[in-house]
Length: 139
Image (tube, rainbow, N blue to C red; front, side, top):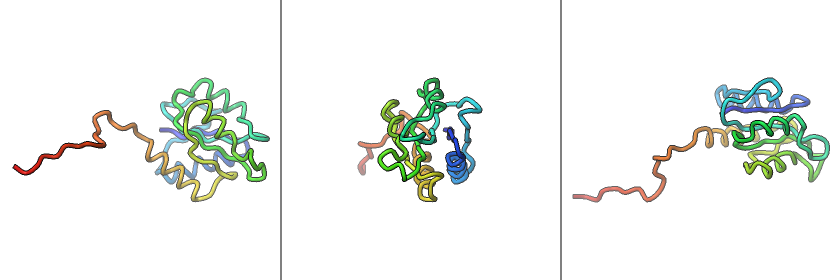
């Protein structure tokens, strides 16, 4: 999995870098400078009063099949529109909102995002048994 980000002021770029470092160097990609290689978590910002940035929209139009979840940055002063880009993207592409963060996020935000990545980094094997596992009784 990659962390793919879109950043206007540098807040989301810093957040993506902090998450990647916490995960031991997970690959980070600026969506304006490359193409994703496989599944990714999107980190983006919220523009103006709750809009998804045009650059994020254009990227998702091409790459949404590999989108696993979304994180959005915003500013608390926007009230109900705080980090609303996450809600809009999650609804449109049927993915979870992993986090909404104020500006570049807190250490707790970074940990929350890193935990989500660890839990979703590898798809489970179709041969993994998770319930109703048979165990032999004594002979």
